[in-house]
Amino acid sequence: FYFDEGTFFTILPIDGRYFRLISTCHTTAAEVDDEFVLRRFDTLLRALGLTDVSLGSPFWVTRFNPRQFLADRLRVGGVFLVGDAAHIQSPIGAQGLNTGIQDTMNLAWKLGHAVYSADADRMLDSYHSERHPVARRLFEYNDLLSERIFGRNRIKRKLLRYQNHLLRLPSFHATELGKVSQFRVGYPAGGLFGRGGAGAACGPQLRAGTRMPHTAFTSPDGEVFPLLGELGAHRHLLLAFAGEDAAPPERFLAPLRQASRLRLTGEDAAYVVYDRPSPKQRYRGPSGTQVLIDRIGRWREQHRVPEHTGVLLRPDGYVAAAFPLTDPASLDSYLSLLEYTMTQSCQGRAAKDDRNGSATVRPHRFPGRVASRHGTPPGRG
Image 1 (cartoon, one colour):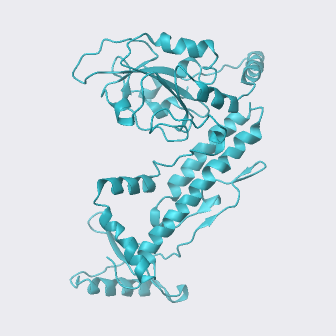
Image 2: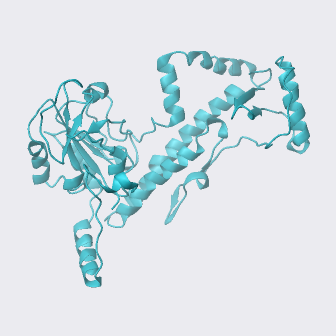
């Protein structure tokens, strides 16, 4: 409910017995105690005509001043700021937790690769160049939400609140939902995508730096492919979209393997995705551990991805490169950013493990991963 002078009042049901009441109050903090809060809510209820509603003993009473802070740098040397240490946001958008988790996902895999990287600084600096603009844009969006609810400028507040009526439009509603959920957060022109070629697009929607859309791919036997589970701490994933081309998967993966373009993912993280013409039509296409089926049959159509397209996914679920299989220049550009001496380092580490009598545990492969069915997170040994 909206009142004059930027005052609003919200009633949120919790379990049928308890309700959460939220309101603005233009009063100094020293004057606001528990009794003041109860009197304030009682006055608002009566102003709405809810005279039959009486407030009982509150379970929890708190007050806060909406404030936002953003660090100038998210990395200084070996010190990284993540989550609330990097940015304090107004709770109006309820996005602080999601932002902190995305910070962690962005940084964690880069720390893993930096151990082997010949240019660790470029890798680690990309954390700031990718995540800092996201936090800044989120602050700007939260400022608009605050003006819409708390704003004291009557004309500006009225214009912003008109957007509430626009939420009835599907396109505007989807745009706002994408902002609040942060599903549309991307890194189109910064960080690891700042060098020419790495940010190339293949199709109007799928491009490097965007979040990989949800998939419903399965194995030829019908087992659901756990896309996020296949991604690991520093594990990339390659998907080659064959479309309606029923050629064996080796036809699509062999040229990439011969050119050493699978050195980042390895053989067990490269898959070929085939279209299924119709959910009711029995599919008799290629089979094998590197074959995935789009059983709905419309994923490429929905996201307008041409057939014979390759997509490399970063460990945090973002598209690293999208490219025609006949012209993998953008894949080469991304691989050049992550050039590291992993072969030598891994060989040295393996030799050391052998001398110490230790064993390396490798993740189970999809499909038929036994561990994932017994509670072990997919992609973990």
